[in-house]
Length: 344
Length: 285
Image (tube, rainbow over all chains, first blue to last red; front, top):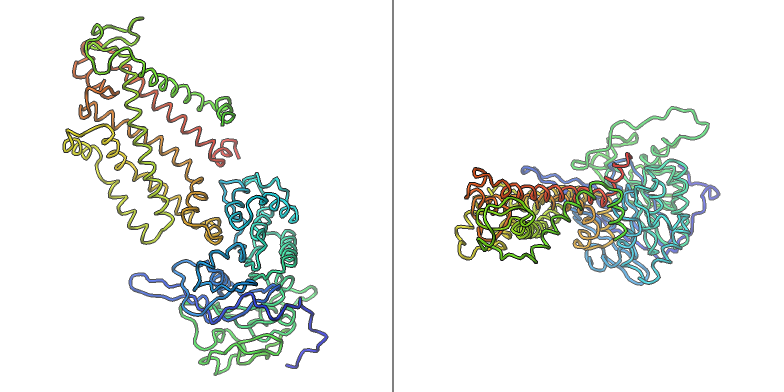
């Protein structure tokens, strides 16, 4: 595989390299179940290190049960038993202060919503169904803001997101799915946080509303110059919105890099397959699916976790787990045969 | 508030009927404070008189005016019921919401205790308390004991709702945004639970009044303090039905039924108003 010609590399939003808003260092978080004396560890987040820079959208991709949601719950400090952090650290850097999520719970609590907000999976349902929308806004956001001009700021904020301030008087069931989704985004961005976690914010929406919501997130991100971690299994959404992309497989990060380069030259065979599975206009080829299923995370395969399904697997992959090493495409990749996969 | 009340009275027939029935009861209760007779004094009027202009509901064989006796009896019975309902509602609310929200082991321990309370037979325990505390017994103590026994069913109901609320997105959102447990329970979950509280309060009030009536019919409460059950106790003791003094038994029964019906209709219509979902269901949505 030769180096990509320079002209092919798309220009991404140039982040300020000195500023890492989020640093995750060798993070391990397992679901630990114990039933009738049988203990099972489900290794949903296993030894993941990554950084998210200021003013960028970092995408996380991977199939279901690859640990995407577990990872962002862990990094946002939103985990509950039976999930536990086994090792590693998560550190945020909000401009003037740095917060270690699991060693400084008080500072983390103070930073929530003010500096770090979360657009949840199924976020249409984040509004309390028996309370008016304005009460939800007050409960979630007012504590973090100036009380007396809250109402004006709230209305201005809603207008910017093309929502009529009249919706504040409504109950959630009186609004459409798209409106609730936009309200959830409004709720997550009203405090102008430095860091936004978005967990599949567009999954339940139809394509047109999806477009609007993506544009909205992009616009808010650019205005606030904040960092976004954007999770979805939909690779086309990643192509449309993210600056850098991390690919997860079976609780591990397998590849990371600038989105355009990952799409142009995937280094990991799994990434290559993900991208290969995307439909393209005019391409009538029948798409092959990978044989097998994602491994059970309580008993992952030895060596490289992808080797039972990998068409390029060699003897070494069975016993030696590959390290995340710098790749040819300005990113990192964990594969003994990095760069050898072909996209048809 | 006034406008809401006016609308409810105008558009909700159950509310209107309940309000009328309950206001009759409340007028009776208010009249008890201006009664011309001393409570518990016997032979203040001619005994065994049928209803007439002078004695609207007749008089008893003990020489008491049934109407004025009734006012005091309703006041005492209602006070007992309300006290029980208020205390046991608070216990049920706290236990149910905390248990449901915490879940897991804490929930198991709390619910084991809860079910133990629920399995205890109420009337024998109340009788036991009555015999042990015989000399210090007052209706307030009895009400407290009754409310300590009467919360467990409703706390289980509230817990089941809290258990489902705990896994809703808005709860996760609230936790994430840094709200404390107390804030989440009061601001986010309580509005969900309030209609249930109203409904169970009505049930509980009826249960408590029934308990009071049962105990006093059996003569286990202070029989010289007028109460609805106490009136029936005395009527039985004087074989009122046999001697044809029907008004002595009929009026207490009529008023107890009015009280129950009124409470039921009010609770139902208020519940419907508070809970927007049942309002929608009523509209056929």
